Length: 130
Image (cartoon, rainbow, N blue to C red; front, side, top):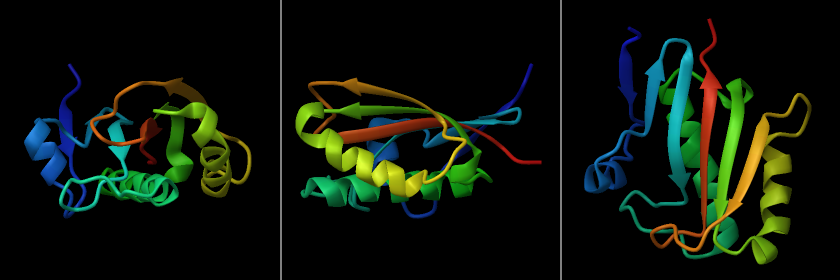
């Protein structure tokens, strides 16, 4: 049986402690990253949407780094959106900054009606480099 190792980025434990989940789990050569949101260090959402989106990606990068990965190691992305019609243009613009060239990771976008006070969430699976 493959062992599982919990991964936490430095300085971002408030949401994980309150809601009792791990930022990521390393299993074999894969890193399964929990949904990352645009939370400040106190666990509250960044109020402005674009800033919240950018902070979610910064939080994602910190979690990937803690697990020995980077953005180029991502193979699968799932994003959750509270108002896709209004948000998608901004999401695509920032996503294109984050992933500017092929090969792009798989991506599934899902519209939802609740994200615990947040407007965007991103979860990924990454392959840990040798």
